[in-house]
Structures are given as C-alpha cells and as structure tokens.
Image (tube, rainbow, N blue to C red):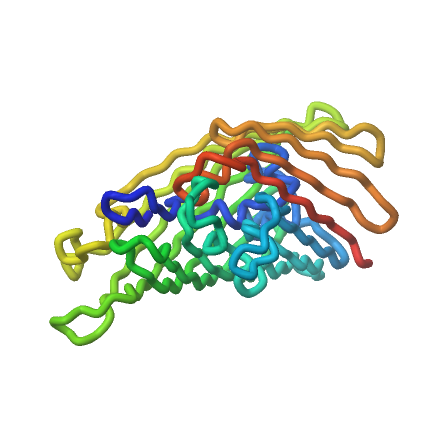
Length: 341
C-alpha cells in the first residue's frame, strides 16, 4: 500500500483484487476456492482438474465514468481488470494459461477533471500478469494443482502530488492448492499463494547515485467450501487471509524513504470473508448473488449458442481498489466462456 504523505493518494493493499475481476466468481461474492471455473487459474488451480476439451474465458470491465474530451481524452476513465484464461484438457490433467493483456490490469485517472470533481487522484496504475497452471485428479476424490504467476506493474502519481514517488514492481511467485469432495454435494478447497516483489522507486538516492530499491512479499491463504444441495443450486463461502511483509534486510524504513509514505512496513494482515450463491433456472439462465467482504454483488449468466455470457456488479468496490474516491463506486464486469471442442 502506498500513501503519499498528508494526501489522499493511495494504492490499494489488496494485490489480488484486479485478478478477481472475473464475472462468475464476482457475482458469487468472490467465493471461488471450491468452485470449478476457468478463473480458478487465479484463485485455486486445483479446481481446474476435470475440465476437458478447450475452453476460453474473457472478462472486461465496463466504463465507469461519463465521457469527456478534456485533454484529448475520449473518456475519463476505464478500470482495467480484464482477466483472460485458456484451459486445455490433457490425458493426465488440465493446463491453463491465465493472463491480462499489456496494461489491462490497473487504472488511468490522469484524464480526470483538474478540479477533482470525481473524487479520485489523477494517477495511473499500469500492470500486466500471466499465470501458468496445471491440475490433476489422479487420486479421486482429491484434486491438486500448482501455478506460476508473474506480474509487472508501474505507478505514476498525480502531477499535483509533489510528495508521491513513481515506482516499478516485478513480481513472481507460486500458487498451490487442493480440492476434495468431503461429502456428496459438498466440496472443500484450499490454496496458498506466495509472491515476491522487487521494487524500483523512481527517485534517485543521492548516496548511491542510483534509484532506490526494495523487496516485499505477499502470502495469501484461501479456504472455502461449495455446497450443492440440488443440481440447480450452489452455495459457496471463502475466507482469504493475506500477509504483506516488507523485507527489512536493508533497514528499509519510512525515514530512509522520505516522501514515499506507508508501504505496509513490517507485517500487515488482511482477512476477508466472501459468500455467494448461484441459482440455475433451466439450462439457459443462472442468477448469482453474494457479499464481497461487505460489498453486495449480483450476477447473471445466459447460455447462448456455443457461448455463455456472464455479467457481475459489485457495489462500492472501486474505492477499495484505488484507495480513495467518493463517486462512481460500483464495479461492472462482463465476459463470456466458450468450449471450443
């Protein structure tokens, strides 16, 4: 989490919120540890086991602010959290490649009105990522999975923020998980993600005649269950615990990084509870509802020829992603899934 000193500028500490912007799990409140879906490549790779054929998932964040031509911009903003996945069924398991296109993980508020009327800092967070996952169900009814995740991101503070510091961040880590059928109609899933980040703070260190550097680590544990009392109903719940650690081998403190503000120094622990349900009305329509750690969610799925269209809306989640803001708070995600063969 980055806060510019004495300002409202902030980058969120929820590192996984962008990759969670997939329509089906969001419609169910984000509960995904024990729910099989192409987006499981980001949440619990073990849940991919059992997929056959070739599946494609696409998600896109809808426009959140009204249009404007100020500064030559065609629109004020579009939140980017567009998760994609390609899932391939293999004879011995399932492989999935999840990713966001270049720059499609973040936001760009630099085109906002200079008077601050939208309530968000005129800053940019630019990012991209890729995930390679493999899952197998060799020991029924237990599934296991592993994934490698890579991220690159860049932060640019607002022009009028004279205390903020731009930075680059490279992340790499491993994601493991399992999923088990503990009772007919009841599944349990658990996963653990460990990410290591290398930061380059784009402000020169006069003592070294170079840019300052630092490292941090994210440990995330997710556990949850999915109950299927009937073939047309799914009720799910997750608990997500995140621990952010700033490596202190170089004695990195606020005093050594003037103007940077707070970067989850020491340990910062975050716990979130995600709950939701999915109701199928025949073979063509599904309704979803949930609670994303206090934020109400709704979702809809419609089966079309050869493709399933998904939509999800989360109330008041945008300020949690950005770190501030008091207008246009809801998140809207739409996408589709298709089984190619």
